[in-house]
Length: 424
Image 1 (cartoon, rainbow, N blue to C red):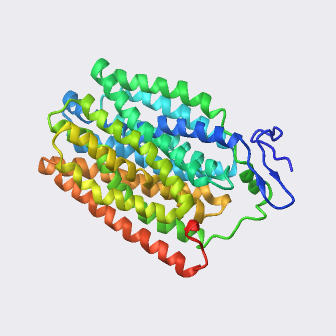
Image 2 (cartoon, one colour; image 1 turned 120 degrees about the vertical axis):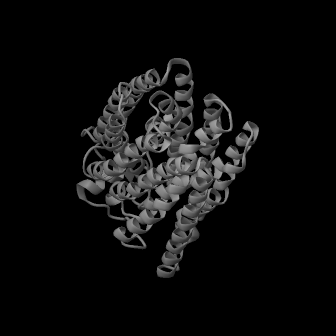
Image 3 (cartoon, rainbow, N blue to C red; image 1 turned 90 degrees about the horizontal axis):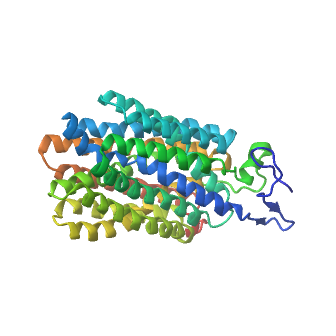
């Protein structure tokens, strides 16, 4: 059977249903993986924690405290939360390519505009739009599309895409930190906006909808296995988990750089620790993606969450640059698996026709958690003068996430005890 592409072209990238009911997977799926990883590296690297390197420069120029400056990041994440739901739903029913192209253009233009901002409210508005209509049009649609391209081995594929995001979350802040040191924060934002447009727009044009998703939109999937829980129950459960999971995760992502600077180390060194942590996270996300294929998505998610929760408070005990490097490597490998675990869990527990929408709704709470974690970090620093309470709150949020994920696992096992470990 020939499947048409998004624009109606014959399926050079299609799949072929065989008589024995197996599916021949297209080599183009690896192009989709690579392009999606690159797009998330640039967009999520800027939106998730790129604002961390602007905390002190904006404080020095305008006198704004870290709490209000942290709200720039929160505004972007709230935009991501809103945009992820809307854009995920649109991508489920229309063209992933068009949604991604629109997001790439909006994101680049908003970053360029932010380079000219002089008031906090201007940063808030621009970053919210960049999240809602920019990065929100990229994350859920691209990740869901990648998973749909794979009949088997989706965990590894999503792990690679998630690794691209991790690379961006380290590389983008580090690159911006170098630019700030050499040319100033305004020029750094301007350079980032131009780079975003030049890189993301051509990449978006290569995106194609997964052939199996096209089948679903055009007439339904014939052989899709049933999910162990109703979709709305899965979405509610995972949303509750990621709210606390990402509250924990956001603290070092947003406040590790200023924590290191508070130890008397320069911005470039602080940014390099974050970069090293995210480089290791690239490997961690791939490994945990493969682990999800072997042990099951929920189990892999729980293990990564446990790793993150146990270690997060350790950052507050470190004083030297070399110790920060070592600890960042250890922490970064395990924490990185959390996002891969969340994405694969949503994929495994929801039907194809609802995956982008389900991921969009779930990530609302992920970005809210990121926003809460980032803001409470700045708030309690302003209140107490150090980061001890900030990182303690992160560990507490991590514990709550572990309880919720564990309960999900045992609920599914109780309802369907025949499921294999690799399914969960």
